[in-house]
Image (cartoon, rainbow, N blue to C red; front, side):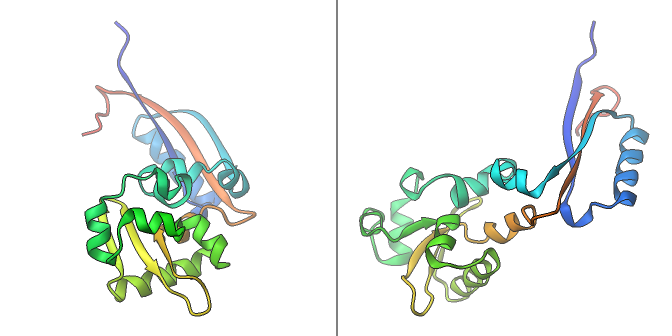
Length: 182
């Protein structure tokens, strides 16, 4: 009978990609009994263009970069209780955006969105709909006020999309009997 195998995609984040880190991770994986099937690097440009980090953090990113607000399952009662406006009215007004589109509309960077997200959080102009699902009212003088989904994600995402950087990865496999997940 063939053994049951586990597999994983293990990566080193861009800020930590050094030869020493690659060696340490590789030695640690093999010492734990994992077989390295493939090893390589992905550039920040590829991660960005293919939205790979958005797929990795899908539950959070889907609301921030992938889906448009009208595609989200927004709890209308929570939206209205927080902002005093119905969800349908906000959609009809056209001032609801995912974080990526809001950055483009407002002409701000990921770091500026993160700063604005902190401001709206402190001002209690933020609502949590569920795990990894937030909406905040971003108000910047001289710009339109907009409702933004998961604005915090843009700063997190930007760490993986810095031009010239990237991740280093290992695709690994091991027998479940030798090293269980739990």
